[in-house]
Length: 263
Image (tube, rainbow, N blue to C red):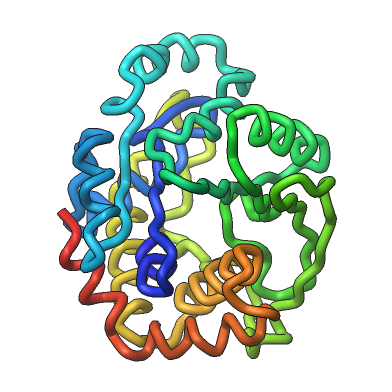
């Protein structure tokens, strides 16, 4: 999604890690790597890439911007349970805007939004938009109305709703389904699933096809998340207005060209 935001005039940075417990899921590090994007940029290199108007987006890995935190991965695996650092690390913000920086992240449980917004304010984010997505991702359900939490500048937290059908999304599944043959092995050892690499390759393939204009559930997921984000940022008066522009970007192929210009 960062490339869609960049093509819409919003410089964007995504940060993460290759894998981490306790869930060891497929990460955007793995997907971007499968798509041929460098996942080893330093913070300075990412900043230069974001500042380049021909690119405007970047990924920064935790191993680069905070090696000491990255070094705790094995310890986090040993404690098994989700640690508090899993919440706090989302707000590290390795690259910040000179004037303003906004936070986009996901959550699952209702207890998290006030914690995230409190930390976001403390960390200096000018606004925050929290999407309730599957497993905490930033893509809401594609088949039903969802609630989100946001604040803007000095405002209080506000709960807002959105309905995917209002922008022409009609999907039977809440998210892009994983092929049955690649579903995680339930009784595996505690660690990454052996199918993660193949899922990442498939996600990269579907994502690249989507930004080249292929209609699919992946395309709808990108459309929905990007449209909501652009509305939150005040670039459009409504989510449908934002969706109209994002659709044009998706089917123009411009986002795909921008993606390929990234390091």
